[in-house]
Amino acid sequence: MKEQIFLLIKLQNADSEIEGIKSRKRDLPEQKEALADKLKIFEDAVEEGTKRLDDSNKTHRERESHLKNGTENVKKTKSKLLEVKTNKEYEATLKEIDSINMKNSQIEDEIIYILDDIENTRKNLKIKESELADYRTIYDRKTEKIETELNSIDSVLDKMMKKYDKIREKVNLSLLKKYDILKERRNGYAVAPVWKEVCEGCHMNIPPQMYNELQKPEKLILCPNCNRIIYWESREISDEQEDI
Ligand SMILES: [Zn+2]
Image (cartoon, rainbow, N blue to C red):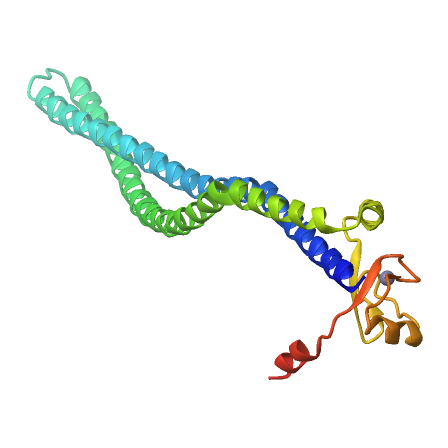
């Protein structure tokens, strides 16, 4: 029986390990997706900043071109002054020049504002670009790690399954049936260690007499609370290690 209980413990460990690998296999693609989503946020910020800078540059070019036209317009209108024949025409042309000058001055103000905006947008974009570069390094490293794990996970799982099958072959059929039923009913956790009279499966105390029996594994003992197959597992060494 001692040997059989030992095999059941090994079977449970293999089962838990398989579950762990399967859950990693499910989680890893999600983790990869979350990393890509975050990268997209940084990329979008850079794209938005670039677009804003392009727009501002375009507006700047437009305003400069308007100003150039305006300046030429003043020159042209001033030359008209030489050709006017009446006072009225003269006054009207002066007014026209004033009006163009006013418009030009407005455009100049706008250009100052736009140049300031371009400067700020450029600074902001630089920060966003550096944030993206930093995150991309993290993204590349983490994604590569996930890819490597995903590439080997099937073979790791396969190996573990084979090990699991080999252990199963050695367990008595009646015990195996008990194990399988318990595993199904107890969320994949059929065999639980007990230390200091506490069952790790349900975290409840077991009677002291039973605890004594458990330390000399001669028969199969079930936890009176959760019905799991229980075994005594000394945690003495790990307790001491924790103290250090
Ligand atoms: Zn229990």
